[in-house]
Image (cartoon, rainbow, N blue to C red; front, side):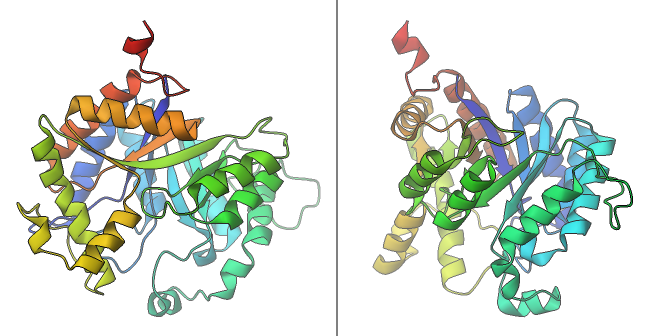
Length: 339
């Protein structure tokens, strides 16, 4: 069976508040745990009215405290926005509170615009220092040495698995060189996915913590009882992408019956390219789509995400997606077909 996990952004829908978004987040995490999802990750974004996961480490602690077994982590922390020591202390604290359940995914992008970067007191050259910052951060999780001048307290000597995240070739090559697991953002930037995977797998150097490459791919999955309803639910995400490209980010919109009346031809082309890694449909469509994606790309794990307006419909979609994943083997063979 292919391992499956869930990426959330704590979406704030039109007519709702961040408080309601956080209640839905915890409810979805508990739902995911019951459905067999391996991980529940939250992503750092800033200055986005429809995304409430800016204080990512705080929310990870909240979700971990409200669940029992599912791994909880960041997908990811945008390292250029932070000092490596502070990240090590935050995730060391989380790991001390919730042993063997905390993941730390690291991204190289700031996750925001330049004005917000200035407000965060961070600057673009932070991305250029990403390899050195990752190495420094990893060092803080090593057991403290005698007379070590700076330690992460807590953090030193704790087990916090670190993943590198990326949507281009840079992080794939860095993850391979450092012997780290790699997660590709194919849910919104799939263009370089195949080349990045090939570079990562070909260039991987075993490390103390990872003997062989481990690649996770993100996949948009919107499932409903009928294909027509799934396509309608998917229009929420399509609208959000158009609004972002128009420079009008806002709260998460409700679905529409006619997406063609909403966008211009060039916007449609842009969204279809960005969301090319998407499986949308009824349970049979979703099973077939996930199986085909796994067979083609052979990921070690899937990170599923879905930007659905109605919380009940979102819960149902992730339940159908989990059922589909349980029917797909690691090489993309449908289990029921194989038998």
